Structures are given as structure tokens and as C-alpha cells.
Amino acid sequence: MKARQALVHLGSASIRATRRTQRGRPALHLLSGLFTCNTCGGSFGIVDARNYGCMTLKNGGPAACSNDAKIRRDELEQRIPDMIRDDLLSGEAVALATKEIGRVLREARKATPSAPVTDQAVAAKDREVEELRNLMRGGVLSPTVGQAALNRATQERSDLISAREQKDTRSTDRVVRLIPDLARQYRKVIDELPRQDLPPDELTRARGLIHRFIGGPATVEKDDAGRVLVRLTLDGRPLLGASGQNVSNLVAGAGFEPATFGL
Image (cartoon, rainbow, N blue to C red; front, side):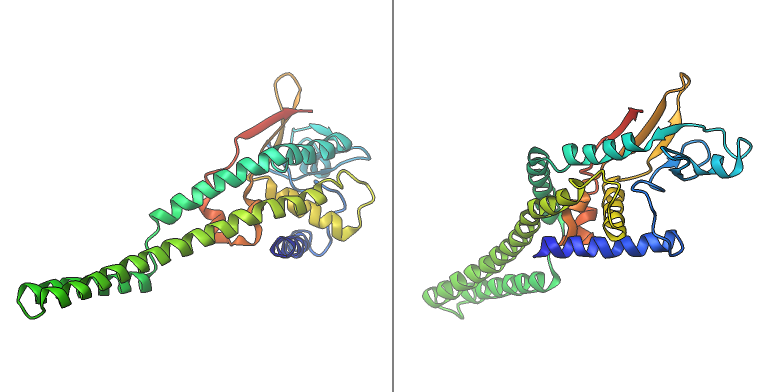
């Protein structure tokens, strides 16, 4: 259920974002606007019947931008979904991501300060233990009565700490269990690509998902030999979906290396 909710939320958020950036007109092509020109910083979009290219050059000519790199639409729209499918959403990749994200979350929770309420309860038990010891040392409590009360207070303190640890573990486990379900939902979207006949809402949702899986600037340039190079970094954080932005930020460092390929 949460996996489906995350996908629905992704779709609605993507539609809103696309409408804002396109001034109410959703993009007509899968990857329009998701790549930028490394020369001028302008958007890469459809410049003719078959190719993506720099929109600044198309609209302003060579005086506006010198990057005349073109990428076949069919090649790029096949290559990017294939990378996401193979590098992020394959069974092996999801299993590795689940294991790594679980490890990162457990380590982060160990390093995170405890909840104030729990800390206060533990501190109160510490004071109770110390007070009981003082009463026993002063002879106010007999050894039998005092030791029984001390044992009870010590056990209650241990129970508080154990309950806190179990809560943290359950929270981590919920996030980890969500990842494979989200991966299956996302793969259903990616497996539909590339398609030229996607309805507008499905196209927008697919664009939004691809955009989220590209974890930073994605640029296109030409090298000295005239070869067109695409540079991007894939990001697995969409697999955390409905688990919350704070969790996504925790695993920001567990990302992927930048990729460069020629077309």
C-alpha cells in the first residue's frame, strides 16, 4: 500500500513540477529539459524530427551557443531507461541497495541523540537508583528491602533503553521492507519505456521518475574529437519513496558514481 502511495505521490508531484516549469504545458517528449548544454547551460530538447539538441542554439543560432551536439532521440530514450533498469532496479541492485541502506540507517540511528522523553525517563531512573543506594548506605533502608527496590529500578531502566532500541529497529525495518515493493512499482513504469504513444499523464510520471533517478546535473557536450558525451549520476534515493525526506537525506552519501557515455 505504501509503495502505491509513494508512486501516486511521485506522479502528482511530477505533474505539478512539470506544469510549473512548462508554464502549464506538460512536456511532449520523455527527456526534454532533463539534460543541459555543457557550453551555455541551456536546456536540451527536441530540435528536429529525430534529435535532441541545445535549445539555445536552435533558438538563438551559433552566436548564442556553439554546442551543435545532437543525440538521436531513439538512442537516448532507450539508453537512459536501460541504465535505470539495469543499474538501479534489477533484482541484484535492489538487494544490494536494501542491504546498504539498512546499514546506513542503523548506523545513523545509533549516532542520533535519543528522544527527549526517553532520555528524561532514563535520567529519572538513574536518580532513583542513586537515591536508593544512598538510603541503603545511610541505613534508612534495610539491605533486603533496599536491594529489591534497587533491582526493580535497574530493571526498569534497562527496559526503557531496550524499548527505545526496539522502536528504532522497527522503524528501520519498515523502511527497508518498503524498498523492494517500491522498486517493483517503479520498474513497471520504466519497463514501458521507450514508447512513443504514452498518454500525457503517464509520460509526465515517467519523466518525473527519470528526473528523480538522475541525481544531479546531466550535461551534454562534444569532445575534441567531435564525439557527443553525456554525463550524469544515477541516484537510488527514490527507492525510499514514502519513508520520508529525513531518511532520504541520511542516505544521500550512499549514492552512485558519475557515469559518462558517448552517443
